[in-house]
Amino acid sequence: MFKKLRNKFILTNMLTTTAILVIAFVSIFAVSAAGTRRELPPAPKAFNKSNEMREAFREEIEREREDQLVRLGLTLAMVGVSIEILVFVVSYMMAERSVKPVEEAYEKQREFIANASHELKTPIAAVQANFEALGATEQPWTDNIETELSRASNLVSDLLTLARTDGCTVAAAKKDVDIAKVARSRAQLIEARLDGKKLNIVAPEKETALINEADFTQILDILLDNAVKYSKKSINISLSAHLLTVENDGKTIPAEKLDKLFERFYQVDKTTEGSGLGLAIAKAIADQNKWKIWAESDKTGTKFSVSF
Image 1 (cartoon, helix red, strand yellow):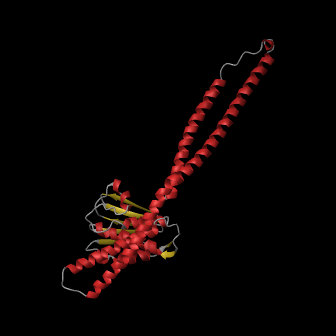
Image 2 (cartoon, rainbow, N blue to C red):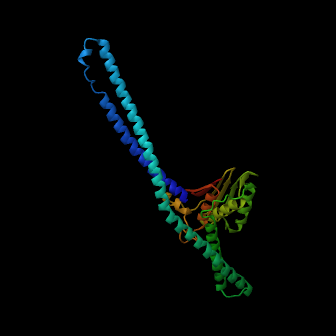
Image 3 (tube, helix red, strand yellow):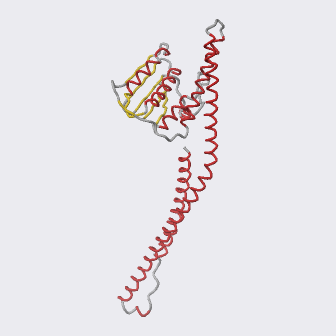
């Protein structure tokens, strides 16, 4: 992420400098070339009696002017290259100095999330274990306690996942996976939550892809969970060799909010249960694997696509 930011900073400076130099040098060259087209100086009086000598004098002047334009062009080119090199070096140094504090702050934040999540996970697990050991009671608030403990545990797990994927440059292990089989098995697991909604799967009998199975499964689970929450009547899953789509017939999401869907803690509908981390995790996993994930929405519903 920060490497891209540095490169963008340098590229912007280089393009700006190049545009200014081109405009300036073209103007200088054009003015100089126009000056050479002015009327030639009169030939010496000694040449007046000889047409050949006057013509030779004219040709010599023309060659001299052409040589001057060539030298000017070479000089401008050398100056331009030197300036470009200087701008690149300065831009690189400025980019490093500008981005480094932001990168350090981001790294500290990431470490804090990872450490805090890890420390929270242990006491939450202990509370859950002790709560289960108490056994069921008829007190109505016990279900609320169990629900909130589960929610806290899931939130901590999500934060740990984000912390692990942030800035991760290690390539995930890949193998040949029957993604059609994985899609059907994961879809089957959510059937109990459909509550009358229709689930449609369009996929070949077998479709093998060289991917990381755990990452593919986690993204699919996130998209299916999201579809169950927001769909009204139906959920459509489509799968091909390099594309997964999960579509729900929920409310239309405005175009200006589509990119925000993958931001942490962002929720279009604040009343819906969830932490707002699911799609952020899906985006982080996709980026780590160099996959592309995006959302589209119209009056028929919202579709999430993953290209891998």
